Length: 547
Ligand code: FAD
Ligand code: G3F
Image 1 (spheres, rainbow, N blue to C red):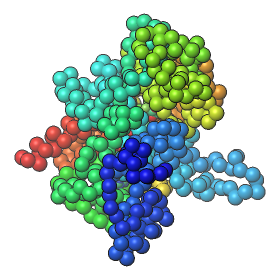
Image 2: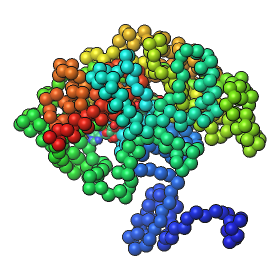
Image 3: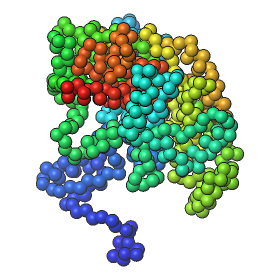
């Protein structure tokens, strides 16, 4: 690039920064330069194309928004499998390889679990251990639960409405961020025409179009919820974040009150005790009960004293999936603008700019993000969109603008007999008790599954042909990543762990948060509803702290 000092031909410059040394790139080598230069008293400005705030969504990266396939391995890399059966590993190894010869020799590293019976497992169930939790890569679909089919009656209609409204505001619910997209409109109009009377909507997403550049989206996450608290140089006497700190358990005092949390710096091994007026545990639907089960100090085991429903009533949504390549006649119809939505003009502009592009969709045309909400007639939640998962990887030689993912989820009953137990023998990769699943689907869910996959296939056929390798299938249990119920809220201690404000029965200063509190079988994504419970918990805690 040339700079001639001629304002009409020089690149436009909006801002000047001065520094002693500019470092472009914040990788390890950039960091070595920066560290060494700063140690020698030099002023350094480091720039990097990537962006990451405390608890940020990794999909907020521009590179990912240009090519969502990049995200597949991010998601994969941040999900640790929770329980992998290993009591019968010989079968898959060559006879000369080292293999366990007895049950006592079964592998036990990284979630490998000799106690796990494959038939009762949730083989795809995972946990994420990063600042920002699963929110650093979640899909951000935040529907409300169906009032009659999914929602619990621990709150009345008015209370639910208030909680949902507040939670949606915090998560930045947006139903229109993808509507100005030819493909969104094409998919929606095609399905509206095919299914008259069935409600077809834009997906309710936790996101907003970037204020700086409308081509990109800011996905909601811990960072957006924290707001300025997540800014690296924001100093607040009220908020600090201490990363790399693991809660090992809670110590109980003689008065049925939690006395302190026992924590450990996972880098240095330094143990830290943290005292508080209230202890709020939100470590995920499986790791939260894991912490409680690990709370054995001296001869005191907290889990023995907690409500017996802890770990029980576990649910996970059965999930069907496929991907289609958009139908030729649908794609060809776009230039004719059959629904009078202004496509012809956009296509023309695109064609003029990119004469060799065989598709009519502008390169920045947002992906489709729409759905049929769960209903009495179709008791499943649906997502017709693009997402980046290992099981939905698009071959690089197919243009991604043609691909649409279909994900269908249904509900199951919350039964006491579906539970996660925690081992006193085996430990997970972080030294916590190894979870073992005992999970089966009830008859009702099995019947619904039949209808669900037929419906998904039917909808898919309206849109295009199946992408080879992504034909309709059921995904391994756990794939929905929506485990609920493990510390469910309720009205009585006999079949629940917490009250409707997340407080553990009998423990005044112990509050649990997350999808584990949701006390009903659900088909839709649960995080918004978990946020409602959290908001109710906050109200109660504030009241108590101020009393
Ligand atoms: P998590 O997000 O699991 O966070 C738990 C946190 O606890 C983590 O940061 C972890 O590091 C920390 N932690 C765990 N153990 C300890 C310990 N011992 N000490 C200290 N810290 C600990 N849900 C939806 O509703 N809509 C979606 O579209 C959606 N999409 C998803 C897509 C993907 C790929 C995944 C993986 C999940 C998705 N989910 C979605 C699920 C959603 O992300 C979770 O429901 C949500 O993140 C739960 O929030 P949480 O804070 O309760 O738990
Ligand atoms: C879920 O946790 C999300 O809620 C979905 F939106 C997502 O498509 C799914 O994971 C993929 O498995």
